[in-house]
Image (cartoon, rainbow, N blue to C red; front, side):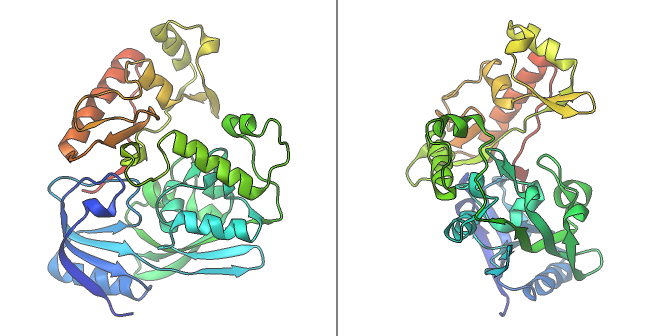
Length: 344
């Protein structure tokens, strides 16, 4: 397909947060051949580049972006036995529905997550007891260092909690074009997450479709399912990562919250470390659901979601973010890390 490039394209409508200025140029990437063309266009003009998918995990500055945004639109889902080859521009939830219709298990607990398939291996997206790294067998990408397309097997992607080769070890080197998932035909759904276990307490053998529906309903109840007209869904999802800290941090968290250690939620994270829920830290630092009176606040249904209440600016987001980070650090000695990507 011929490459289409537009000038001065407002980016806010292409993100779930609905915040940010315009890109100097935007290229619609509908095939792999468009990628080297777009990069050559940028190189000739000395422009920086950014890869945009569904915009569900993105913060765009009010000043916009002075370079070329490559908006991934590569489509297509192809199945070979238990493996699904999915274009980077496929809407993630459309792919989930495709697997449910075919009765393949492995991604049902990630139903309702916004964004495109191409972004899922980058951040190792996960929810309700599943991560994409559990089913991804290969990622096809354009290697900007060697100017060639490569097929990276699972181990080469270096997946770990909310991180991978693509966003941590070699950021900006690879442009994902296709992801291969190997799923379980007629497999049982995953019911590791407490909310799901409670939901199906009296229905011990739910179908994949029933589990996906329950996940969407739970996400909706927390304002984490995109719904037109619902201000709680104008967000970038969970704004802070669950921090992984030395095990001895647990004692300070308990002391600072006035609770016994056994009442502080945490999970083992290996190598003498634990994972603490960021939502718990926010709540015990005073940042409860509905916090804030300005154009940006905390969702009324989900502590970790910062929401655009209407006409918010990036500067508004920055102010609340810094207030939360500094307060949590002062109280618990833990520095929270932002989860959404900043377009810079």
